[in-house]
Length: 352
Ligand SMILES: NC(=O)C1=CN([C@@H]2O[C@H](COP(=O)(O)OP(=O)(O)OC[C@H]3O[C@@H](n4cnc5c(N)ncnc54)[C@H](OP(=O)(O)O)[C@@H]3O)[C@@H](O)[C@H]2O)C=CC1
Ligand SMILES: CC(=O)N[C@@H](CCC(=O)OP(=O)(O)O)C(=O)O
Image (cartoon, rainbow, N blue to C red; front, side):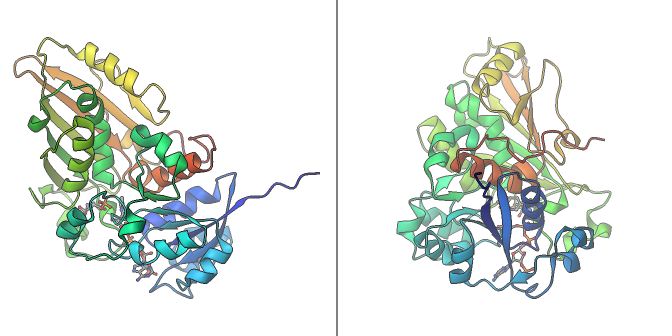
């Protein structure tokens, strides 16, 4: 009688918002077993100490980041750490045979000079970085399946790129006219205490921040340039809105053919994403809201044309912690392991 063996998986940074979403999702994943949780300030504490609602789930302890131990125990390691740490850990884990999925920005860039100029971190792992694949399955499914190291996209880039990709790939817009106006809930900033995230600061208010200099800009530009076939500059403005989860990205661009109407574009988007189970293109005249996606790995996309301006307007909605982070990383793992892309991931949001 064959014994069913689950793949042993570890999470470094398990106490953070991304880490705890990974715990939640991986505990329900039929092919994996969580065998290691790592951190820094939370070392020695149990998950139930940090998140009492998880006290009944087995109470794995948070351990020190000891690479020999992690590689000995785990076949797959998720790194859910602040930017600038993964590159100091991943090369050793890879050498020891682990598959690594990094949720930070460390492995999102094909050009390390761009990473260094935006993140201020000098790197000595170039030979590893060039092997990383950008973990946006809807664009790079085949490369992800063959990879040992994934640089998982940021939450804003995920929502923005899924809205823009069909337009750029099919040459439907003047690329330089693209403008991304995006809004995020406060969990996008992680579990660290910050003044701007206090209820008294964030509630009943909406504010733009880091206009023209947000660090997700070069990441969006890198993939848009890849799709357009030439170097692009993209206007990206993020906003903090008083909600916990969710990103809504509204993308504007001038169409090359002003004769295209909304239903033409909906047909094009639907065809582009026909093999992408996590993308739902809305029917004519329907625009998504973040609440639809909360708790699920779905990205909803609504498409509109304004015939007066000749612009296409695309609205995408995701859960920043799921499709924008932990869920997308597991979607990539499913592809790397040749499992169904939807395995173990929540298929419906918890609306309302
Ligand atoms: N939040 C979001 O919506 C998204 C975030 N991301 C990215 O994912 C990554 C994680 O984000 P998020 O979960 O929000 O962050 P959090 O701040 O909530 O969590 C950070 C985690 O990193 C751990 N950590 C910090 N320093 C160290 C260290 N030196 N050694 C070991 N562990 C350490 C912390 O552990 P401890 O508590 O034990 O110190 C904690 O578990 C970031 O790079 C972020 O940019 C990507 C997409 C979306
Ligand atoms: C609301 C909020 O603060 N959001 C975060 C989102 C970016 C983030 O988490 O980083 P990546 O998605 O690129 O990894 C920020 O703007 O810094």
